[in-house]
Length: 163
Image: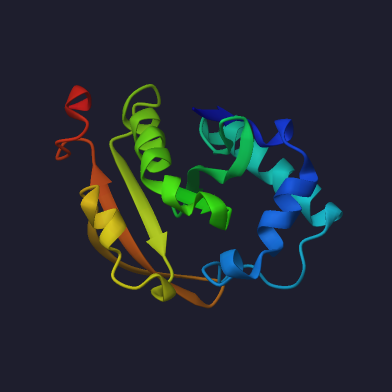
């Protein structure tokens, strides 16, 4: 069973462990240096502020009560961007988690579009294409290049309740 919880509800040590895992960081070009307790506290506060300021943000993701990672929607250049960072042991759960986040985005949150930014290290982007995301250019953040993909609730066969 998957549960969406607030980041403030999980042990900071779990977040620190995830954010310092080299297998995870390989796909996080904006993550530099180590991620310690002070970094974690500031990061969680910034993510919680997204909920206050935009009405959405990332969740802590629990699978059968175990911290699997974090993910959700983040404001990025005026867009709601889907982010998903999982512990390697939970990489096989990505599709189900992304489906849940998209259902929240196009359902209760009432969003019309969601973007995904992928670093070029992610290869073909086949996973996001299977959801119906389409290429939507590139964006540069802090000197790093990302490929942008977009999914519209109006064109999505998976979310017909949102048309």
